[in-house]
Amino acid sequence: AGATWLHIDVADGSAVAGHAISSLGPAAIAAVHASSPGLVLDVHMAVTNPREHIREIATSGASRITFQFEATANVEDAIELAREIRATGCAAGVCIAPRTPVSAIADLIAADVIDLVDVLAVQPGRGGQPFDQSALQKLSTIRERFPTLPFLMIDGGINGDTAPAAARAGANVLVSGSYLFAKGRIKARVNELRRLLHENGH
Image (cartoon, rainbow, N blue to C red; front, side, top):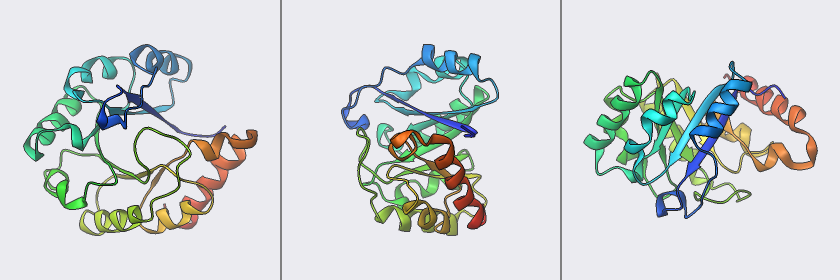
């Protein structure tokens, strides 16, 4: 359909995952990697103990591994976790839930161990939720404070209406699920989101 990244949520049913359980794990990641070796596999670990799963996820073919900031003890723990992810050869990302302010991860980004920040615009665990407009201010703040951050991602509620605002706020990666798969128009909608990113300088 033209997508260059595949965002894979690995959820363990905990509060960090919004009590969602995902059947996607290392075996599924490995199968996708084997069938589409050129696809960037962006794995979001919405799990309580991400450190336990890093190596297995990495060896399954993940390109980027993102952990939930709320699953770490503090910024120092998050910095060490990001370093462990990078040590596997994967890029390291951090995801923040709607309740978490940008200030909570500022020192983590400043430590230069993070390649990607994933801003959730919906509550974790359920698809099809409306876009939380407060995510736009988070994007703007991160992009203004950390202009060299390689990837700033907006995750959830992304469609033809919300994508332009997210891109203008600084997002250069859009994660969309329900919008892409509705009405069987995946390729057309992937192309539309790509066009909207391009029109907003990404």
